[in-house]
Every structure is written in C-alpha cells, then in structure tokens.
Length: 101
Figure 1 (spheres, one colour):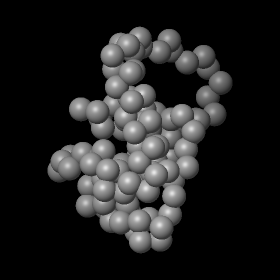
Figure 2 (figure 1 turned 45 degrees about the vertical axis):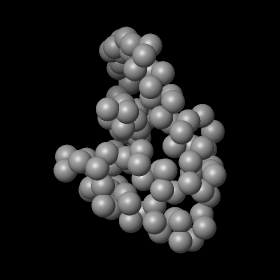
Figure 3 (figure 1 turned 60 degrees about the vertical axis):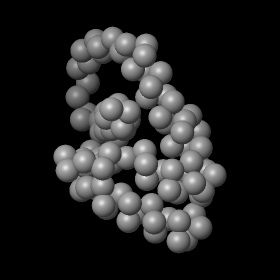
Figure 4 (figure 1 turned 90 degrees about the horizontal axis):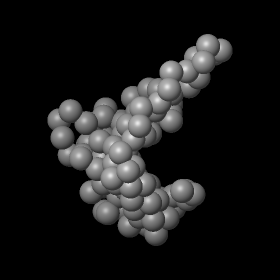
C-alpha cells in the first residue's frame, strides 16, 4: 500500500509537460493520512539510500507481479526483479543516493 502511494507521486512528478497552455483541472483533495504515508515513505527511501542501507531500500518496493517503475513518463524497471538488480548494482558500486525531501 505504501509503495502504491509512492508510485503515484513519482509517476505524476515524472511526467513531462505536454506543452498545453490550457489551465489544468483542479487537483483532487489528498487525504492527510495518505499524504503523511507518502511523505514517510519518501523520507525512509531517501534515508536508506543516503545511508547505504540497500537491503532496506529493496523492501520499500512492491514484490508483486503487477509492479513496474515509471521514470519521466517511461517504464524504467519492468518488475521487482529489475529494481532489485538495480539496487544491487548500486550497492556493488558503493553508490550513495542523495535526495532532499
């Protein structure tokens, strides 16, 4: 459930603008509990990445057959196994993920 909120946030933020200058429709009201859950998840993802807790990072993604990851409007990782492989590659490079929330 937590990851679904994160996917929605990232999917919406990753979509490129269409160039349409028409005013956008009013956004739906987000329930405070849902918004807090998304913020908590993003903060945990950011902390785990910057602290090099790669196993904890993997646990934040959905191990589900319907899971896929969208970045900038395109499928970046088609399934959970691809995300795990990417996290493992980052870990093997001793990479650090830096984000500001």
